[in-house]
Structure formats: C-alpha cells, structure tokens
Image (cartoon, rainbow over all chains, first blue to last red; front, side):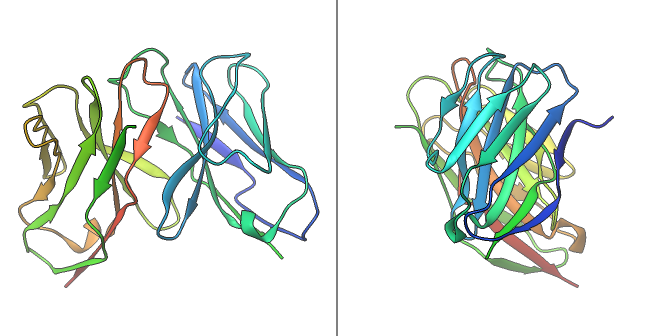
Length: 114
Length: 112
C-alpha cells in the first residue's frame, strides 16, 4: 500500500543547477499538492493541481514550475536553484470535491542548495 | 482569508501528563478540521478529523472537539507517552476541499 511516493529522498545541489522532484500516488486521487516546510513557518503551498490537466499557484510559487503528467504523477521543477530554496518538500494528494477527506502525504524530499 | 492559529511550541511534558495543544481558526462557512502528526523524518499523517460543529474526532487516545462558538479545535490526550513525541499540525479545508490551511505546527517532546 504505497500511497504517495516521492523521489529522491535527499538531494544536494549547487546554486544555479536545476532539478525535478517526482511525486506519484496510487489512490486514484484527483487533487495533488506541493508544499515546502521550513522551521517556524509550517507548511506553505507552492502549487496544486485540482485535477488532471490543471495547475494553480499557491502561496509561494516563485522559482518553481509544476507538471501534472497524468492522474498519478505531479512533478515540481526548480529551474535555477537558489539557497533560499533549501527546504523539505512534501507532495500530497486528496479527493477532489470533498472537503471531508484529508490529504495524504509522502515522506518528503530534503533539498540542500549550496 | 481562511487561516489556522495554533499554540507556539515547543512543549515538553513528562510521561503520563495531560496534553492540550490549542488551535483556533478563521473561516467563513463550514470548514472541516483536522489534526495531523509528523514523526521525525516522515511526512504528515492524519491523526483525527471533525467535519461539523460539535463533532468529536478521536484516535490513539487523542481527542478534539469542533467548537463553532469559539472557533476552536483543541487537541487533548489524557496521558502522553514517549512515543507521542512529534510535531502536531492543525488544519482546515472547506467547500470543494481544493486547498488546505495549516497551522505552523507544535513540537511535543515527552520525557520518561
């Protein structure tokens, strides 16, 4: 019962490098989300996808792009990494159209940018 | 806009002590409320939820009651264990459930 799977789990980048964080869910959920978690800041929404084919900006979208590849997969791309993007990134999914249902989270990607 | 405010941490308790973590919310309409728990090195896991006023969510000895009159959803446990050491997040969503609003998290450490 995999749930939400994120890869990689850890990554170190140099400033200016690019990379893509991968996320896949096997719960047939319509909605998927990317958050970053920083000390004292809680979770901040970067982008979300309410359904396949749609994406919307969250609270902190600058410096990131996303792709909803299909219903299962939602990737997050850093085009030119900056030290301020050092964080733990979480992907989540949920049923769309039902506020009674919770989000399901992956285990996170710990990203350091030097 | 919608938001969640929870008590600042960190909280340190002795084993078997009573736990309360305060959470209040601001939202129009009728949100659903959640408590999530995050253990070290892991993602967030749903702990409990309540979807309408006066509902009580409960799980693993934790409880929280949805109080619309005080816009609160405080987390309680009668006797904490070392294994309860984690970060706890209060959250809300409403409507079509396309966006969740999280508090900043409260770190709990339980010492033997």
